Structure formats: structure tokens, C-alpha cells
Image (cartoon, rainbow, N blue to C red; front, top):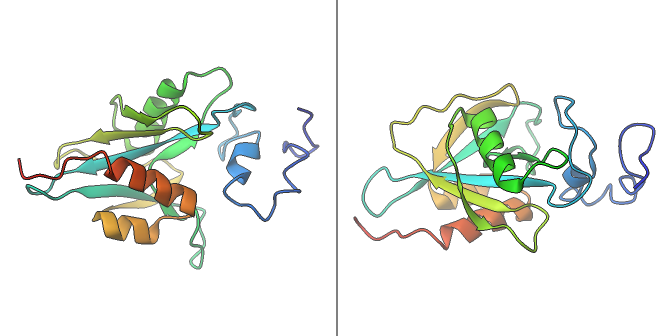
Length: 171
């Protein structure tokens, strides 16, 4: 597909009112690295921990560039764009490491039929989170609170999908 002068596809201005699609149309990441022009465009990684039996907390990150009144894309799980030719599982592993400092292999949850596959990983409650320059803070939240602060709907749907796979019975 031909690209515009500013690194966006010609469709970018056509879908300016559809913010959920804009990340897939960008040619470069926030730090100038190339992104895949073909799906899957990136991966989301839902990170959770068990603070006590029968309960979980989800990790959400706050984007440094988000404005105070911004709702969509301000808070959400680790996620990021796929490099051209990069296997999607490697994208998930790389983004998890870059955005949280966790050098782990997340488990695929939904990888086919979507432009943004979803992965998950359970970590120990004592695991250290080390943010990249893309984020300025993080929080461990209940599922309900994580769904409340995360957006847009695409992100909330990714979280709900993972929540449906987690066994919450007391261990």
C-alpha cells in the first residue's frame, strides 16, 4: 500500500474518527521504529497476579503522552506494534519485556481472526515492574477497575476475553 508523505497510509485521514484503527495505520512506533503494514499489527498482553486465593489483579500502564482528560488509550495493558516480518508471539514477548521489564513468554489466548492478538501471563505478586519511557506509571487493579479505566472498547474486550479464561477458584 502506498504511504503518505508523513508516514501514514492514505486511509489514515479517512478513518480519523475511528481511533481504534489508527494504531494499525501508523508506519512508525512512538519511538520511530517501523511497524508491520500487514496484520497482525500488534499484540496486547494481559498481565495478572493473585494477591490472595480467589482474587486477581490486572496490570495497567499509563501512557506518558496521555492528556489529563483523555480516556481512550491513556490506561491499558502492555501492548505494542509488530515489526515487519516479526512472529506475533515474539511481538508479545518483546512488548512485555520493553514495557514492564518482565522477560517472560506470555500464553496466546486469541491469535487468529484478529488484527491485534491477545496474550496473557500470570506473574508472582513480588515481581518487579520496570516501565519504559512510553509509560509514566502503572497500577494493579481489580478486573472491574481495570475495565473502568482502560479504553477504548477494543481494549476492554481484550481484557474480558482473558478474564473468561482465568480460573478464580481458591487454590
